[in-house]
Length: 576
Image 1 (cartoon, rainbow, N blue to C red):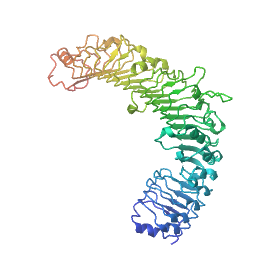
Image 2 (cartoon, rainbow, N blue to C red):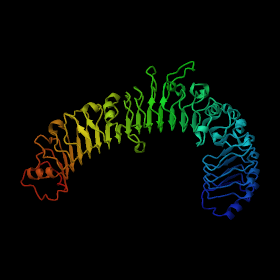
Image 3 (tube, rainbow, N blue to C red):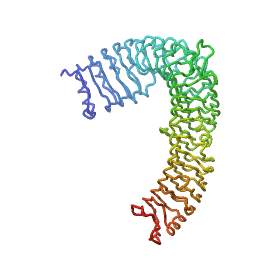
């Protein structure tokens, strides 16, 4: 049988070792895929498929590969992606001289590479290289692999002994790599790390200028080499930079001088206490660019010692920044950048010491401020969300300063600090106000707002009254579970266009006054408000335009005492 290709579509068609052995007798096979199969190992006879060019074991639980695999001298592609149980590659991989693609991404049990990988000079796809502890599987084996393309990750860089070894990798020659990931494993003996040596090692891993994205994960030095912060040619095309888990780092490089940088993520830098002028420019640089002139997304997170973010007044920084996220930086104080002209989304979570002087951001349409990182939720379009934070009052005070016409909803939830709601705090474009579980909520005298269309208040124990002024656009007012609320404002005057009023579980609510309900009201819903229920039962309602009346669970009410106590406009039966 001269079958040349086997690409299995039904994963359960091959179910036993005998089936696998039978398949491997097809000696003319050139393409063989076991992707997703429940295969723990390959038999030694795999080495007899001398014509095989493509072997795919992606997503299989294979534990070992036989040494006979290295006899497949014509093999060009070996895919081991997500082989999560694979512990070791065959020791003679260097014999696969025609190999072009070796994909081991996600093979997390692999500890090191085989020896002498430098002989595979035709490799143009090697997703990961795991640096070993020996000279023959160390980082210098990368020196001859100049044809590598696409995304490339170097793991276990803690096994590099000195800058000389790093230099032999010749990363600057690899012009076809556009995504580079440099990873160190976490170290338990941080005091014994030679931070100067670590810096020199990273210095010698300077990439080619064609690089587009760079990840630095677990770097053990205190400062970064100059090639990362001077806007040098090797970094001039980088659009995305991620710096994470660099525990010893105490100073950031001058990333503001990277002319193409659009996305920047800085997280888990435990030693960083201050971001200062060096972040924006470097005195060694001959020509200074506008700091972060292309940056669109900035994420700063999980830095528990970071106290100060200094933004120099003399720089017009972040002119194109659209998204800013600051998460789990519990001792950060001070202010945010004063002016972010392009900012559309701002998220602050777990930064309870932040003064929260919000930037002037005329394009802002999403703002989320939360008290803890665990309460983070996705910012929603056209909404200001203040959730479980003691910064609620300072955020409210800063809202008018934002000067954005795109924020339509203000939602305040589970904030225990004093929250005074005033028209001065509500920006002009606001249409929806939602407040829930804020025990110290108060409404200041004569709340006025020209655009507010809907107010929802839920479980605010200290609220005793509304002091509403002119709300000409208000259409919906809902109040629920506010046990201290005694009176309703004169809605006929304050909200002459109100259409829906809902009052639920407000036991102390007094009867409506003559000027309370406007003629525009079409829907009234009342639930578990005993004083109000008794008054309506006795006196009825004379609201001219009322169409829908919901008296929920009024089990004691059998009838109203006289004709004419309800408006003739009611079109639907009373709901009990």
